[in-house]
Image (cartoon, rainbow, N blue to C red):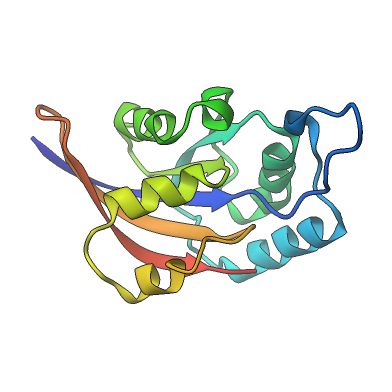
Amino acid sequence: MTVVRTVHILRHAHSSWAVPGQRDHQRALDDRGREDAARLAAHLGGRGASVARVACSTAVRARQTLDIVRGALPDALDIRFDDDLYALGPAAYEAQIRAFGGPGDLLLVGHNPTIEQLVFALCTRETPALRLARPGIGTAHWLTLEIEGDALDGAMRATLQDIVRP
C-alpha cells in the first residue's frame, strides 16, 4: 500500500562551541541560534499547523530549538525525544517516518550531516526547494517533504516541497 505523508525536518539552530570537558550532546544554542529560531518561528506562518507528532534529538541544542519554535506549532502535540536522532544517522530518521501513521504531520528535529544525507538520498525529483537546499541545509532551516513509500517493499521516496530560512 502506497502512503503519502508530510514530514517537516528542522535542523537545530546555531550553537556554541563546546568548552573543554563539555560533551557535544550538551552544547547549547548561542545568541545567534536563539534569535534565528525565534525568527524562524515568526516566518513559519501556518506551516506547522498540521504537526501532530514531534520526534526530537535529545541534544540540548535540538531541545532548545524546539522550545523556541514550539509557539508556531499546535498546542496538542505528541512530543518524543530520541537518542537515536542524535547518534544513529539517516536510518533513525527513516524509522521515525515509518513508525508515524498519522493523522497529521510529523516534525523531526535534528542535526547535520544526517539531515542532508537523508534529504538528498530521498529527494530525487528536482524542485526549486531542492535547488535551494543543495549548497547545504543551514542551522534553523525548516524543510517540508512529501514522503511516498510502500509499506511492503520498504522503498521510500520524497519530494522537497518547501524550505524556510530564519
